[in-house]
Length: 266
Figure 1 (cartoon, rainbow, N blue to C red):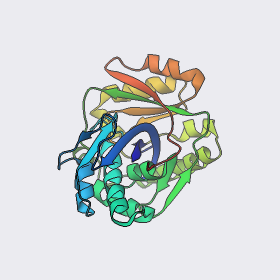
Figure 2 (figure 1 turned 90 degrees about the horizontal axis):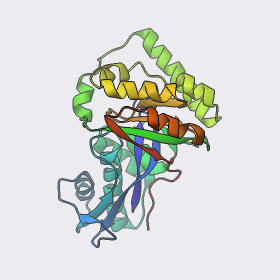
Figure 3 (figure 1 turned 180 degrees about the horizontal axis):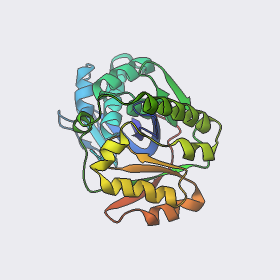
Figure 4 (figure 1 turned 90 degrees about the vertical axis):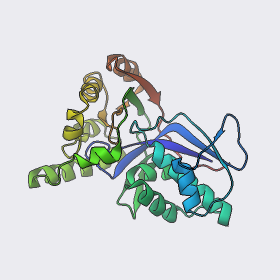
């Protein structure tokens, strides 16, 4: 089974808008495949698998770095729950998978993208899958440090002004429409956040520099991936190299395709 990584909180889409990335988490049940290694019982895939009644050893292989804001725990939990469902019933019930994995993860944006692929908007109970504009890839810039999502959330403000909330709603609405209609200029204009990024970027100054560098060198939108410290940016072929060259030396970058398909079983 293969589940893609994800980058959540695209622009103003805090806790609801995410993109699946072609950086896979592979999970095998009972027999390893390729370079997969056996998981311990504390691994998020294993805890999800056991919680859903799965039995037998688990083996995995992945290039998703944990603690970086690229949906490692979300993809692992999706894989574990899906594997248990297949083992017990021979099928994956997608609404149940979204509900269960979102509750384990604590939010639904990452897991929705990993389950369904492409770009997803979710409320937790419903999901709309948007086709990513076909010319766009994603550059991710990954610094050395890690971020705890739970710890990062405790530093977020408990309330925002009516004006800030209203603007976030407007931007997120237009951003989703811009993605659906391939309006790159509108994507760039609306891929801005005032809800969580200012607080988080104050503690991650290199990530703030990376976002600005990406935008200054041709990205069609850039955001703090999840709670960071990774940043992600939409790019086209003719700007990808310039964006990557401009990013801070305190991290490394990858050029990734959008994973058009979510969870896959083989």
